[in-house]
Length: 237
Image (cartoon, rainbow, N blue to C red):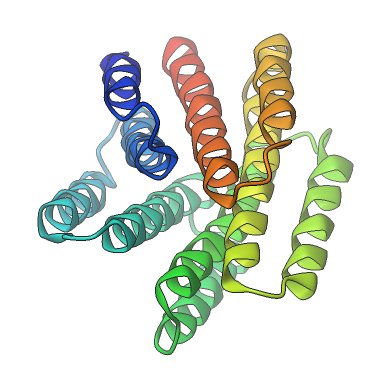
């Protein structure tokens, strides 16, 4: 995919700047999730919504002047993308719609009084339950129910234990990586070896103590997993 080539080029352009590389990965994660939404929408029922959210992302990139503003735009764009996928994969299910609405109300309330890291943490924290919903929908046979619940418990425990917005941000991001591994596996069990390769790198790069390196690790692995599953869905459909 062209998205992968652009990701590698832009990542290399920012060699030595972990924060900028994290942003590159976050931007491309939104783009690949948007591509996934289009693949899953052959009848174009959601085309207007997908196009509108892509336009909001693009406008946000143009208007953002600082790194915190750029990361906030990326985080909420990821939230919008997962919100779209949640609607696509759960249809008219009332329980799913109720969850999506509750998450939306909560994140809007949280960002009103939060600082820069707090707003990004709120957006990623809202991404997680939507990602879980999408994973459950993809796991139609329920074969991954136990590992899904384990990641959900780690997310809840981490949010309770977090002592700062930065810890909340990283905790939500890391659980997103773990949940996306399960989503990719639910998409095609044959992807296990590639998923495991990403998971191994995720663990290796997590040894860094610098929060900026941890953030880069999380966003990069999240993008890579989303790219793997999107390419596979495109091949299957």
